[in-house]
Image (cartoon, rainbow, N blue to C red; front, side, top):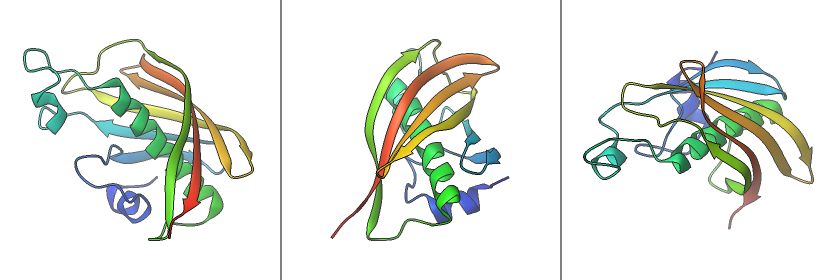
Length: 146
């Protein structure tokens, strides 16, 4: 549905914080399914943790937010520019159900629940091999910067 080249055109994020490798499904204005391949080469694994590499939970939340941004940009038919930033506005009910390790493939399902006054609320679930790794409600907004 969307490869890394299309993702790079829409998301301003770059290595090491770009956390979406591919979009598998996209239902305009409703939901997105995206993929992140987790490799031992990720820079955070050197310190988290040297004896047992585990992906930080906040990065799973960030990956879901990036997928949510792709859903928003597609829905609005727009791409961010140098004067616009897409921000987290809140996270509710974040739960981490299983560790994510090198070699895992994160599949993120993000659904738009509500859009009101420029604030978008999403429900996100991240799975590894069908098992829930992380779930949360995400709120995001786009803001103009000077």
